[in-house]
Length: 227
Image (cartoon, rainbow, N blue to C red; front, side, top):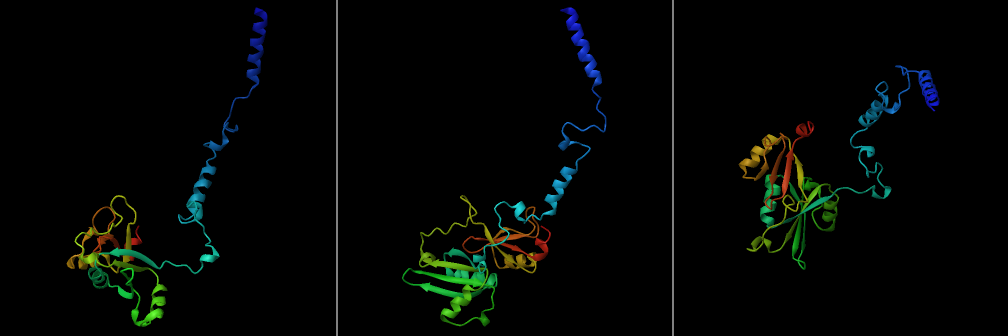
């Protein structure tokens, strides 16, 4: 038994001597993570870097080609409920420079709609259905909704602006020629600020409040180009 065990040991030792030692040219056990060939990682990283952040490959769920049925769609309005139209119309026209594009009254339901925007009303139809159609053909308007009586109701507590719990809606944005000059003017006019241009880490961008507390972001094209 002892001689058999010694023979087996010598045989295994001889076989081990026949196995070549690994060299620098040997194929690694895990070639995909070899330090000698990191090209796979470089190619993967390069393919990610070559795609813009807005591409569908970087945004799961995004469709790059809109459905043909949506060809005529565009963003037309954002609606704010307001307490007092006199105060809100003054703010959006005098402070922000918008025009009243159209007013619609609904006496039976006791509310009015005021459509504000930066379009030139001189080219708009003056009355009736044509004026309504023209208004709804403009992009990025604000629809101010006034439920009659809130302006004089002592128990009315105001509307939720979306920036306190539970958070939801955030803000609208207005492009100006120069953020700092615009904010100087807003300050002289007594506008309430959420953030002034030099507050916080994002410089050159401001947030103000409208009379109902809705947030409005203020920025210029020079500033947003550095983000």
